[in-house]
Amino acid sequence: MRRGRRESQWAVVRRCLAIIRRAQRGPATREELWQAAVEEEGAEPAGEARWIRLAKDLARIRDELGVELRFERELGGYTIRETWLPLLDLPPEDLATIAWLEQTFGPDSPQHDPVHAFLGRLRLYLPPERLGELERQHTTLVLDLARRDQDPIASAVWEGLGRALASRRRVEFAYLSPQWEDATPRRQVVDPYERYFDPARGHYYLHGWCHYSVGPEGRQPVERYIDYRLGRIRDLCLLPERLPLQPPRPPCYAVEYELAPEVARLGVSRPRGITVREVLPYEDGRARVVGESDNLFSAVQALLHYGAACRVLGGPELLARMRATVRKMAENYGEGE
Image (tube, rainbow, N blue to C red; front, top):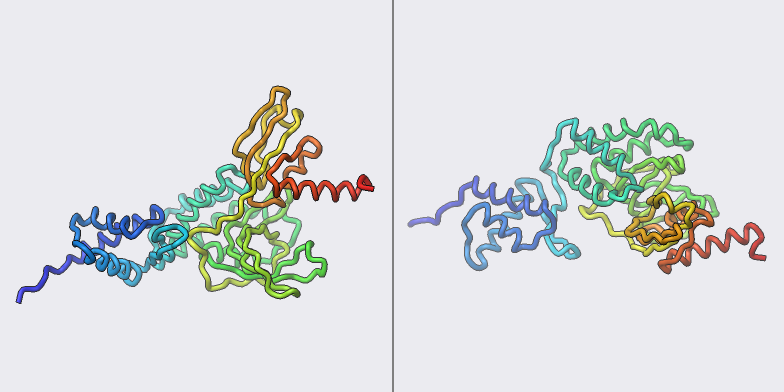
């Protein structure tokens, strides 16, 4: 009895690699994954047979190559969710370049988000030992800054965050914030995304997505990005959960403000916490600035730096926060009496 022609193992490998490459480009529909396989192999089964073969290829990619492709409904396609088999390796000089880019394009940089999204994709594909080397390169660049921090930073916190950033792991720690009047630390469950030094404030910070906080009032959902001062972090531990491929999108608030001529005539700077989209100069030297922010607290602090030379025009959330802040400042100086 004549049997069907068996697929070449190398043809299967090439087809699976083509599917992985398409997923690396961005979220891909089932049809787009299939088309990538067809373009590599040049042969196409008809009807439902193609989807059966695609399902088998996805299983091979997961079980044999150690790469999990999962359909993400909010992204509308398949993405690489986990990579037990590293897909990329780089020489030390390239790792040093990545570390330099991460340090150079800090939170104040206009290109921070796209640069760090790109570098995050590179990190996803590197093997654990190379991620460890990347963190060592990064630490070498910024160690002198860490020494300038007036807070004592526990070595367990510093090293634990390094491991968490290298392995893209969720962390839990105790955090003491001055906003809590009872002076009781709260446990924070956080996806860590960036460790940076802020020269203006003189401290090292962790930028991360906080899932929830546990304190005297019980467990409270947070679901937003927070910048944690490293000197206030205690008892840090790594959790088994891995970070999602796509970081959560923070809420976006409209920002619009006007600068007086004495600060605008020589150019408008990009304040921390605000993404400037447009600068509209007036003939008298004033300038109207339009942008957005994902952190109202940082935006207010940045604009207060200008003092009376800045007037917030909108959006509504920022204007309300600024009015409340200025009103409280007036009360502190007896102007509200």
